[in-house]
Length: 139
Length: 139
Image (cartoon, one colour):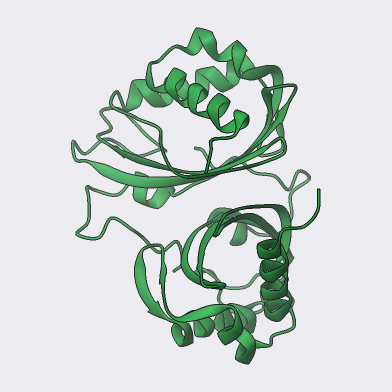
């Protein structure tokens, strides 16, 4: 299936994050956005991601499932990384963690205006990879 | 935008869950599936949902964002309910909770074969609704 224009834009956004080109975020993100329905400036949004990258220098945003429909993007992101700083409230263990983020974006005029994100925090703070890296989120 | 065939099927699946017609799940779910990459039978999958419904009698699956692409569905589900039994490991408080699930499905031959789900467990076990029901998943 051919890539949609919005998929192309979104993948360029992930490239910017993976290349740590945070100054480029104005191309992809509005000055004001909402993140899980809370108002946020692009600066705060970029600062949040920059803080994650400081705690996890090898953080890479890897899209595993990617859908677009109109101005909406849905993505299952996969992370496989080794935190070296405090991450999601947990001290680093020196071991690798693998975890998913499931995130929806609403674009307006070609840039991100709304983000709804859920992250598998339990896996992100677990002490190293499991034989089966997939996890139930249920108790 | 017109509803896709897969959207229609998925919404009928949610209707079956909301109507507690678990015996109808064979129309929507394969005998064997994966849930967060773990193998599961449809029976176990239905039992998991039935257990949630026993703990939360007013559990309703409400799609807030719904995308389809080929054989893949992405949905942001919203729940606004009052657990009366143990839910995600937490004892019921008698108060209402509101929380999201972000879930991807891969269909095969018209039925669900793979599910990847993240649930905002923190919000699902919080003691009642907040002024702003949206939540950061980040620490």
